[in-house]
Image (cartoon, rainbow, N blue to C red):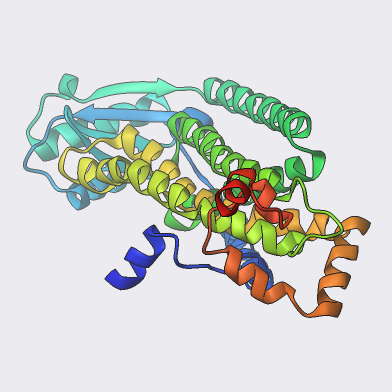
Length: 347
């Protein structure tokens, strides 16, 4: 395993990402179906900020989560979400009428040896959460339109389409993880969703920029197809993508698995799960979804079909592509030209 890692970092490994596009499409289809099934069957566990409810807070250091839930259930509460925080317990329930609130406060105070006024209540309406959701949707639409405009101007519309498909792919899978895990969706979760869109877009733009450079001078005398050139460009950005993901995901994983367990960082948990899942899925989609989809669209163009037919007829494409994968990729190299400095050196 260490030998593979060393070869990977030296650029000696050429992974045929684009050639395995059917595998990636199939894997993505399975993940999307599972995610959509979770959204349909379980739905999202919306936080009290979105559906409204009652939030009780109190201090009971000796209590465990099962005791807290049982106490609220015995008091007639049906939907109980208990969390530990730095200030004690935070228990979210459905919206309760005033008389039931008093009953719950008395039951909690009696069970854990508190005064009734030490069981604090906060009533949250659903209207505020609805406003947050509406603004998040507007932000998502504006973000997508800005992406399409930017990528169309900087690159081309096919790259914009591939990037947007990859972003939607990331959103659905991340939402599916929330649906199956039962994690609460809060305003912090929506911020996480918008954050992973930016991260996934950055990864895709890095790959597309290299592909644009490598394929810019593919012509009638080129020694590789668009598919092979794009795959080589992808391999030369692979280490950058993996390093970026690793560096970014370590602190997020620390917040998710250590911070929430040891320090009870409830709000950070809502945000960190979206970031953790989104970063992993975003890296996967930029390598295995966006680029293969772009290649599928580009290979339909007549100029690249002509190159593929010519190389297939001569049977020389495979060896050239394998050889170029082990060398630094440049636009000139893609066209089979020799840099001017090398010519002078040979003379």
